[in-house]
Structures are given as C-alpha cells and as structure tokens.
Length: 265
Image (cartoon, rainbow, N blue to C red):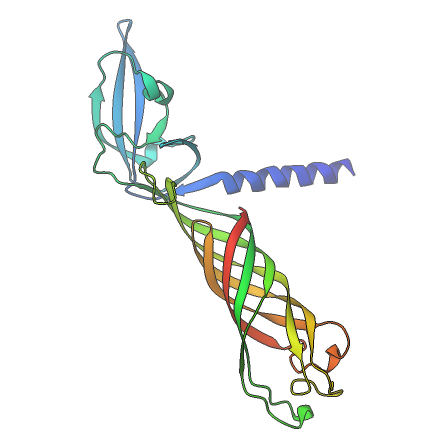
C-alpha cells in the first residue's frame, strides 16, 4: 500500500513539473546580469543573448518582467555585453545571475517573448446552435430532414490546452501582459432542454407537447484567445421523463457551435 502511494506521489510530482515547463522558441532575446571578480574588484555586466536552440524552462512572472529559472547557456548566443557603472539598483538587483525579459533600456525594439506550454483545463461552455443530421432509419417509416436548433445548452468540459504565449512588457486592452492563443480538444458533459411533440416522437407518439430535460455527452475542439474559446462540438442527447424513449433524437449524434470560458487552467 505504501509503495503504491509513493508511486502515485512521484507520478504527480513529475506530472506537475512537466506542466510547469515552458518551451522557449528560437530567436527570442533574453538578458542577464553577471558579476565577475578580478583582482578583488567586482564588476557587473549586462549581457544580451539570443536563443539559438529552443529549450524548456520554468517561468516566473514579476509584474512587467519574466524570469527564466533554468537556462542552459549552450542554447544561447551572446549579442552584446555592457559593463554597468556601479552596483545594480532597483529591479536590476533582483536579476543578478538570472535570465529575464525584457531589458527595457536597450531592448526597446524587442516587442515580445514567445513560448509554448500545455496543461489540463476545465471550461464552462455553451452550445447556442446544434445541427441534428437527417434521419432515414427504416424503423421510423419516414425520413426527417436535418434540423438546426437554438436553445439553452450548458456543459462542463475538461480538456488539454496547447498554448502559444506572447509576453510583452506593455499590457493589452484587458490589462494582460500575456497574449495566449490556444487549441483545446476535450470531452463535455452538459444539460439542456428539448421539446417532445407528436412530430418528433415515435413508438410511442406522445399526444401532448412537453419540455424535457436532456443530458448531453460528447467532445469538442476549441480555438482560444486568453480565457475565451470558440469552436466545434459534437455529442449525443438523452431526454428524460415521460415519453423520452420515443424521441427521435434519443442518443443520436449532433454537431454544434460552442463558446467556452476557462474556469480552472
């Protein structure tokens, strides 16, 4: 029992570590302040480096700056080096011996740092439009054309998000330094309502129209900007209550347009 618990703990730590790693793209420019000693005299120098080989690193955001916590210098090419007069002050004191972005004093033309990451996400989604395909099963003794439905359909969706991140020292219109473009596939579980009538029920046909609660399950793929997502979903609806077994679309595949918002990411 103890060995299983230890195995789960180790796996969880490795999984969390993997999620924290960011993939830093080639040609990004990052800076560092290094202290050297010669004849008992300490000298601080500002080094500007370009990424020549992509690498992974943990990233820490500090207001209008990013600090990269694990950098292999073999992945970098030094662009320039400037000796600093006096000891670093203010924010620069925190950057001694670390790699960071941006260096505003001499990197005014470097607009952003881009990196990739991936992580699990929980979304709240809405499906404002569903397309139900044409039904032609012989048992129906009839054919039914494709139907477009609008209505109140909400769901919780779990997925895996793949992100291209662009970090800028300047905030966007939403007050964010990070602009994130994402692709998220996943699975959904939701609820909604459907009208059961004599026209869309068979064996038995119900003689009274009623609004039935439905349970939906299915999948989705979404494109996103920051926490807002838009895309395609598919699934199967299952009506509940009296007469639900006669509903023509019970367990039938549908396609939908989906809007989502990240709840946990």
